[in-house]
Image (tube, rainbow, N blue to C red; front, side, top):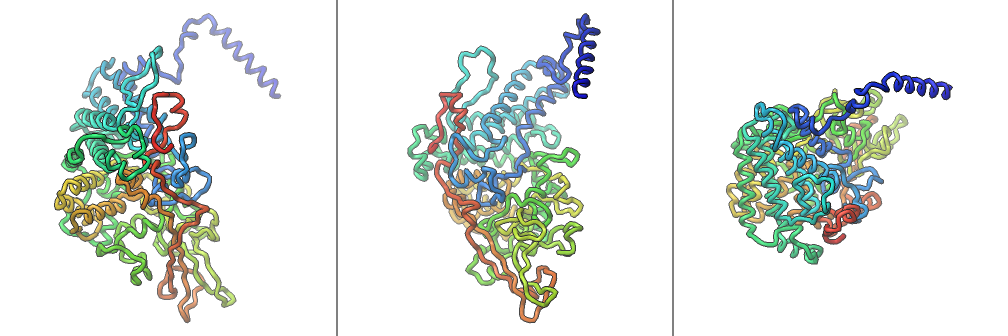
Length: 620
C-alpha cells in the first residue's frame, strides 16, 4: 500500500512538471512564504510588519516558566534538572552558563540588533510614501528596540561590541572588540533620545515603543551607570575579581564624576515623572486603608481599574493566542490546585515586608512570631500566597477536601472517624493527597501576576496579564535614589511616600544612609518578581549578603487546642495553636553561594572562539 501511494504521488508530480514545463512563469514564480527585501522596504505595511517582528526578541517578558526571580533572594525554583541553579550556586562558566533564556542570550540579542540596523538603513531611504510620518514612527521604534537590546547585553555582560550597521558579504573582518562601558551607555542614551524625539506626541498601540518608554529606558541605564558596580574605583574596592581585572573600562567608568552621573540619572528620571497620563494613585496626601492599599497594588500588577496607567511599556498576552506568558497560574500556582509551583517565594522575602505601622518584622518579637501573616504591609497580601490565605475554589474533584479555598502549606492535627488524632498534610504541600510532587519547598506561593478571577482555572486557562518592562513607579525609584545620592533627602521622601501612601503604608522620615536602606527595601517590596532585584543587588554590590544567602523555608504545625475536635481541616486559630519555624532550605535542592565573578555573566565560549578580539569577564 505504501508503495502504491508513492507511485501515485510520483506520477502526479511528473504529470505536473510535464504540463507546466514550457511555462516560463512557472520557473520565475516567487516563493509564496517569503517576501524579498526590496518588496519590504517598498511597502509601508510590510515595513511595519518587519518592525513588529523585531519585538519578538522580548520573548515572554519575564513570564517564563523559570523566572529571573529564582536567581535572587525572592524565589526558589522548585524543579530540579533545569540548570537554573548553576548561577545561584556559583558554578557558571564560559562553556556552560547555566540558565540563559533568549531575552538575554548574546547571539539572540545581536540577531535583533542586526534587524534594527537593517531597518534603520532602509528607513533612511524608504521606497514608500511617508504618510502620517510613518517613517519617523518606525525609525523611532527601531531606535528604541536597538537601545533596549543593547541595554540587555550591557547589564548582563558589561561593555559589548557596538555594531550600528549590517555586515555585508565580503567584509574584510567580521570580528570586533568590546566597547567600553561608557561608550555603550552613551550609545544607548543617544538611541533613547532619538527615539523619544521621533515618538514624541504620538499615540502608540499598546505593546509598542513610545516616548515614555524611551525616556524610562534612558533613566534606567543612567541610574545603573551611576551605581557602585559601574564605578571602577568602587567596584575594585568591593570585589577582588574586579580588582584583578586588566580591562576595567569594559565594566565601568574609569574616570569622571559620580555626582555628574547621578545628576544625569536624576534629570532623566524626572523627565519621565513629568510626562502626562502615566502613574496611578500618585497624588495622595495620606495612606489609604490597608484593604485599598492591597487593591491598588493588585490593580497595578493586573493592569486594570486604572492600575494600567503605571505601565509605560509592556508585553501583552491574550487567551486567543495561547502563549506561555499567559500561564503564570499554572507555572507558579499551588499544587493543590493542580499547578506546578515553579517559582516560590522564600522566607527572606516574606520577612522583608514591614508591619502595617512601618516597623520591621522580627521573629524575636513574640507577637510577630505567633501570627507572622497578620498586620503586614498590604502589598504582602497582593504578592504572596501563605498558609491560611483565601484563594480560588478548588476543582470539583477536590472541593470536598477544602470547601473554603484556603491555602494549606502546613501539617495539622485532625480527628479521624475512629476518634484518633492523625496528621493532615496540607493540600498545597509536597505530601498533598492531591499532588505530592509539585508542591512548594518554601511554604509559599506567588500571588502577584496571577489573575484571582475564579473563572480563570489556572491549570487549563490562559490569562491576559501583561508583563511590565518599564513602569512609572520604577522611574520614581530611580529619581528618589538619585536624589538620596545627591543629598536631596526631602525630595526623595516626597516621592517615596507617594508610593507608600498608595499602598497604605506610613510615611518615611529617615535621612542619609537610613533613608537609602529604606528606599532599597521599599523597591524590593513594591517591584517584587519584576526582574529588578537581580540587577539592583548587583549594581548596589550587596549581592554577597543578599543573593548569596542560603534559602530559608517555613515549617508550620497546627495543634488542636484542648477540647477541640476537627475532622475536616480549615484554617482556624480558635481551634488550633499554630507554630512557625524558620529553617534553612535543603542544600540538596539548592545550595546558594556567591562569587564576585557573578556580577556579570560570562561570554559563552562559542562567542569567544568566533571573535578573538573579545575579552572574557573576570573570574571565568
